[in-house]
Length: 149
Image (tube, rainbow, N blue to C red; front, top):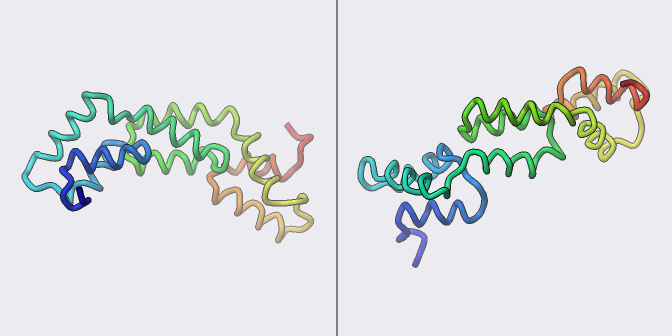
């Protein structure tokens, strides 16, 4: 069966087979293929009732794939873009806060061989960590060195 002939349910299952998707993501991706009003909502309701769509699994998947590379700020943004409920996003961010400093240090160590020697290098390293979603206080502590806790 060619992709153009797949039903909405078939398309949704194909997407879910690749990775976890939130309901909002599936709505966005499948909306152009809806042929009659309400059809997409019925399909998504059925898949959600059967447990194929789970926001909690989406959160766990994002945390598993991205926490080693990104800070809580970027992960919060990614979860919000996926349409995850605010309570789940807040729980995920809270969970990440406990390891934020260690994760920032690991990301920094993979990228830079030495602490910044001047203001320009400090700014460059700070921007690198900030772009990955780490907060200002965490960045300051990482660049200050290991002995500062």
